[in-house]
Image (tube, rainbow, N blue to C red; front, side, top):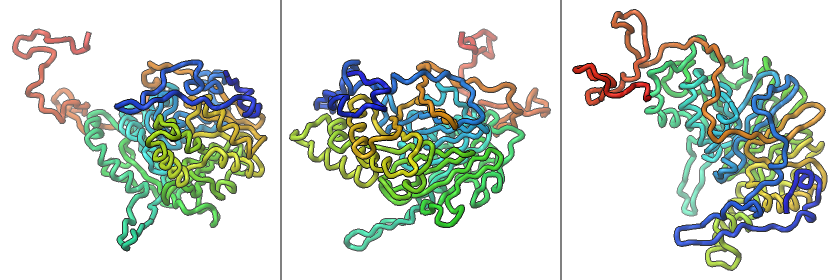
Length: 481
């Protein structure tokens, strides 16, 4: 049964119909996924398909906030990549919250320049929230982000576990600073190879501690020039802070753009996860990241305009979808037990999402469920569970390329239609003047000016050049035509 947007938002779940699970079957080499079928509720998202179209390139109103979802799942799916939320405010500031695997292609298709992705806020350091940082970092400096990358994330967990015999594991240096140190060195081959071209604008300036309301002065990792595109500045947040001391949980506060971003503890898998609250003018947007239900969320999300909160399907459904097994099948119980264990340590199940929604006072103008594999059958089940606890209130289910505009008078949900064949976003012209590359040679052999040297790190003795130096004949056209 096709589900339109009005039915999804306004109708009781009982009127929509029961769950129809996809027909997964176990094969010798694993699960064979169901074939696409427009009549199969596990293979469509009628709610998302019914949203009006967002016009690409639309200018953001100076009095609005725009939220774009580029990743809304923890399982990489062609329809939903791993978590990433992009928030823009009308005063010209913008932020990336998490950047899981597969999302950069969607940022590209939406025309988001790398220069707009220089402030990244991590809720925690699971790879489904951090994986595409590699692409953002490595290719930003070869595009228009020829300025440093700033990465906010939790501080060290400071957790030590003792086994029954008293042997310790930990504490580890597992905060965002250590993450960035190793991340920078992990990408050394890439960054050196691209440094035959300029990797910094010549007029770059670092923001000051006061300009961004930081707890400490900026301190980079690695050996890159301070304002280079390959410089990384980690900004650690005390994941235990929640505002018990005024200002102790402010991650970012920019008087020029009017944005304040606060953090507060989440409960997810192990110590050291956070949620965020963005405040601008009289607006507030809350993003939970991954978390179990907790009282910090009730305090910080009450009265927000939009609350983006994770939600997972029931352990039974999770086990069936991921394994292709049904109750009673050999191996099903093991799959179910694992799903339940993960849920109980890390996530918010459907009915708990409804409970959180019912406890927020004042209620948000819009509650958004994310980190959830959204399709007709799972949405039917989730809507039923949520409405059992919270029968009223505006609710939506995030999907990749969903765009939400928030103004004083209304909240608009739309969907973007992008090209599967999009190239990089067009760069604004004219570009700022660029500095000297790391690898260069003197132009005209006269020591008069520096020019990029793409071959500076190569042994070219076995190269076949376009023009044969002996005969003067063309071996091939260097333009490739």
